[in-house]
Each structure stands twice: as C-alpha cells, then as structure tokens.
Amino acid sequence: MKNIIDLTDVIYLPAPKDLTPLLEGIPEGEWVVLTSDEERVLAHGPDLSEAVQKARDAGEICPYITRAFKSNVSFLL
Image (cartoon, rainbow, N blue to C red; front, side, top):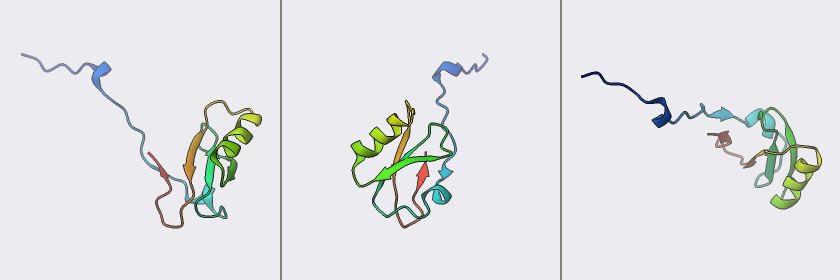
C-alpha cells in the first residue's frame, strides 16, 4: 500500500520574519501597519483604527498589523 499525501491537507506556514529593522524608531506599544508584502511601514500610532485607516488611505487593502515591542519579539509568523 502506497502512502500518498494529499496536498490539500497540508498547511504551509511561512518562516518567521524579523521586523526589527522596520520597527526601529517606533515607540514601544504602538500599532504598526505594514504593506501586504511586509516591506514597508505604512502607518503607526497608539490607536489601531487610526493606523489602519491611514494604511487604507494609502491604498493598502490587506495590510499586516503588529505592535512595536522593545524586546526581540517583533516577528510575523
């Protein structure tokens, strides 16, 4: 009997991405909205809805959202 893997049952997870360079200079605890390709910060601030609105105003439909922390925990999974 052959073992056949049905690829529809496999979940692909991207490798964690180090956001430290992008978050440099952003105050701890602020919400950070990134482009969907995770290459640029579109907006940041203490209020999530305002930061997301700024990203939408910039034309981003599906941004990534994270928070800025001092310790090295700013990774996208």
